[in-house]
Structure formats: C-alpha cells, structure tokens
Length: 259
Image (cartoon, rainbow, N blue to C red; front, top):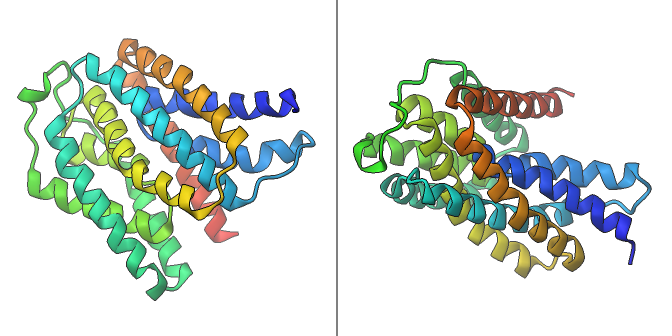
C-alpha cells in the first residue's frame, strides 16, 4: 500500500471538507479538479471522471453532514428553509435528470454557466439579512424559495453538477437569510441531496474503497474544524471567501465552455 498516495488523497479531501464546513458550498467544487489533476502530476495513476465523481459524492455526504451538525449546535440551522428548499431541489434534480437527454450539451452547459454567473454577481450585491437572529425569527418567501430551488435542482440535474454554490447566494440576496444561517442550511440541503447521489454512485460500481475511506476520514476531521472557524469569523469575511470561491468556479465553467 502506497501511503504517499493515500496521504495525497487525504490532503485533497481535508481541504475540500474544511472549505465545505466553513462556507457551506460543498467540497466537490474543490475536490473534483484536484482529484482529477493532482495524482497524475505527482506520478500516481489518474482517476477516471466517473471515479472522481463517485468518491467526491462520498466526501460531500460526510463533509456536509459533519458541518451541518456543528452549525446546528449554534442554532444557525433554519429547519423550515431546509425542508422547503431541500425537497424542491431533489424534485428539480429528478426532473433535470429526466430531460437532460432531450437537450443538446451546448444548451445545457450554457444555461448552467449563465446561472452560475448570476450567482457570482449576487455575491457582490448588498446583503439584507439581519445577522444574529434565531432561526425562528427569520421569515422567508416560501413560494419564491420553492421555485428557485426547483430551478437550481433542475439545472444541476441536467448538467450533473452540484448546485450548492448557487443556493447560498440565492439565500443571501433573494431570501435575505443571514450569512451563518445560509451556510448551515446549505450544508443541510447538500447533505439531503447527496444521499441520492452517493447511493447512485455506489450502485453504479465506480466507487473505489481506499480513496473513499481516505476522504471520509478527512471529512470527519476537517469539516467540523471548518464549521468551528466559520462560527468565529466575521460574516463579511465569510461573504468575501464565498464570493471568491464562487467567482473562481464561474471562471472555470466559462473557460471550459469557451475553450
């Protein structure tokens, strides 16, 4: 057994899970490209995209679960918001998966890229959520939340990518959810949606045991650490970290389309 290879996978999972716990946008944004490109650069065998997708699904499941549990202890989890948006995103992703074969890939990718660009722009708009409120004090427009979550789920289902980095800006700007509450609730929604994706990857036969164990171990350690740091950071700093990560993701998506 090559411990250097295992430690490399662990380090990648640690970074993705730490960011997931801290800002609530899912570690797959970080993990997917790193798992795809870093092992071959270091002389290890490359993972296939299907294998990377499968082991990333495991990481997202455990990282979002652990981060959610830490944020929940601080009273930042908005259960009603999670129920409305979580169920709607799952419904939307099923619909998106169903119609994905009916649309050309160029249209699918462009829709996703535009939606991601809108999410990035949202991160630089003024945030109107009142920080420091309890979940019971924060109201939101339920029909709007359901409609937007279905749209996010549909586009994510069509493209086959996670939509957590779009969910957080929608919560902050449109629904006016406080930053820490949006992060905690996004992690809970990611956890719910990752159950189906992880089960699907397990049944698909692309799961690799050793890398998955390394990522799970990293998630159990790093995601709670990220969540603890998140609770101590100023919300403005969290918003700028989120804005930077989402912008980087959008640039990556547009480069892949244009080039």
